[in-house]
Length: 171
Image (tube, rainbow, N blue to C red; front, side, top):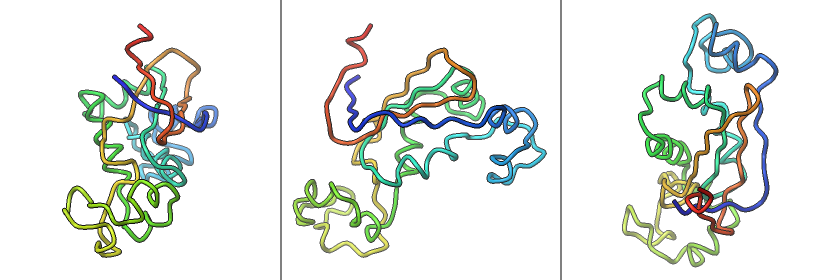
């Protein structure tokens, strides 16, 4: 698998016991945010990360998580990493009006003159409410790494259109 990452590492950790409380008993701030107070998990903890993941960057991400977090995604019905990649990509969609406020699309969309793949229209002609993925055109530019580590931690390598590396070459 070839993926890309640039910009550094962003830690997205849950407070001590916060992730455990969400999944085991449905209590704590995250449970209130998800409106699942008192309902044990599994709950899709990716919903907690998504707003910050796509707020200020474009492109794919490398997401490292502990095995327990990966198991909870399986328990929710994700059968493969590809299904998680597709979910993340779909979660990145935003209206063109908002997408135009990002930095790199000006460059990669040729000043908005290039053709948007789904509609077949030039970007300049798309209505403000047309939905496009801030994560790019390909859901499979993400990479998930599951490894041992401390409880309740997930780390993202910032996405973007930077250096490419092959996870397969590490094996």
